[in-house]
Image 1 (tube, rainbow, N blue to C red):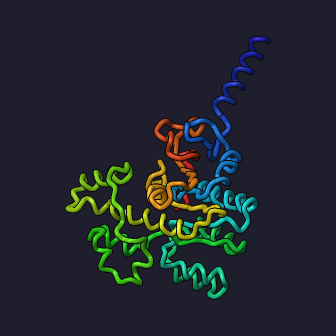
Image 2: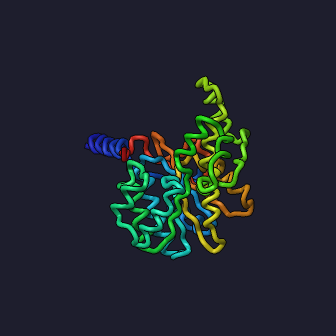
Image 3: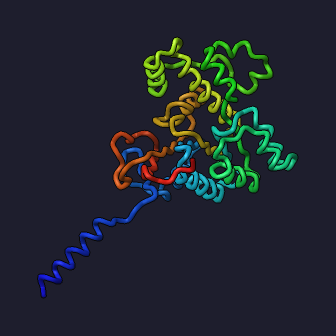
Length: 289
């Protein structure tokens, strides 16, 4: 009888080990140690500028972005400013007119060049900002200029008329191929056999410098600016952060990134140091597109 009970106990124990608690995400600090959403919130609310680096099609990112926005608004009120890579600088007037009630939601959504996943992933952030009278900054470069640089190089921007240059940061754009993210793009471009391999990272530099420019142009020391972007733009505090540091090296900048792992219960070593906080999500998490 005892042996039977012991065998049953072992079976139940093994079943518990086999079917462990699944996690939708886990939060780690920059060293790879366990952290939490509560600790993340406590730290980022002290920053001047916070970058939430996302995986564009990951629903956990977008859900957490909305939760963080709500929680920071509770603490900062109208001193919270939002901005996003997903909106281009020449669409700022449309955002402003929509927020002021001058144009309808239908007009805004039909005229702005919105991403395909806007309705599910970014509209909740825009709606929250509008309903709570928060500024929302369209920070990214108009895609036609990024395409121009990719095809013809940064020097082509100099021929643009002054009214077009208003959607750009001041020229010339500083180039730095020693930054890891750009040096990797340069090497990739060479491997692809591009005739002008430098143009690939130049287009990325233009995007990052533009986002830095418009973030800083709408930054006030008493505010907290929360920016949403693909993780590549702020990982390792490169990209946008590099260009922001050129504008003001004393800014208190904090970064969040999102990574996919087979097992989220321990952060993989390759992600160590990517950001102040790393959100690990299961690789098989449902995608928004």
